[in-house]
Image 1: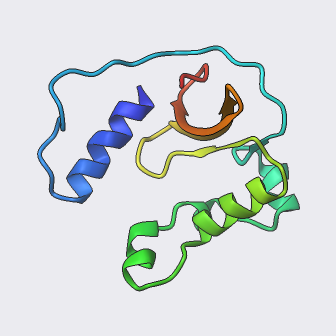
Image 2 (image 1 turned 90 degrees about the horizontal axis):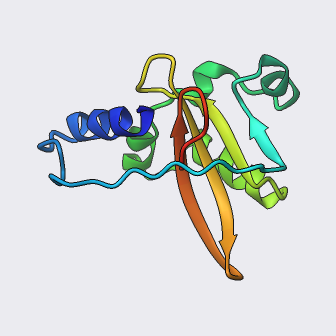
Image 3 (image 1 turned 135 degrees about the vertical axis):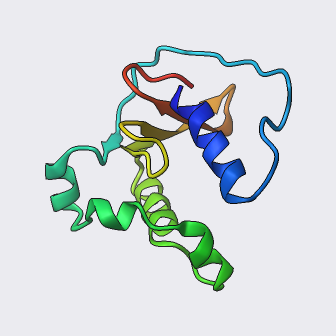
Length: 122
C-alpha cells in the first residue's frame, strides 16, 4: 500500500526506526466524493499553473527555513475554494498516488489522509 510505503519513507527521512508500532489497522472505505481536485491530470495542473516538479518539493526543508511550503499553500487554497479533497502523485513512492480528503462526520470536521494506487483507501 502506498500509505505504508510513504510512512516508511518518512521514517527513513527522519532517521527514525520503522515500524513505529508493531500493530496497525488499515481500513479501506469506498466513497463517492465530489469536488476532488485531481492533480495527477496534466490539464488540471495547467489550469492551476502548477508543475509536477513543484508538487515534489521537500516541504520539510521549506518549513525548517520558516516558510510555508508551496504544496501546503496550494492545499490550503484549494480547501478555501471549497474543494473536498485532492489527489497527487506521491513524491516518495514510485507510481503511488496520495490523496487528502476532508470529511465531516456527525457534523464535526475531520480530515483523513488517503493514499492509494488503484482504488482509494482511507
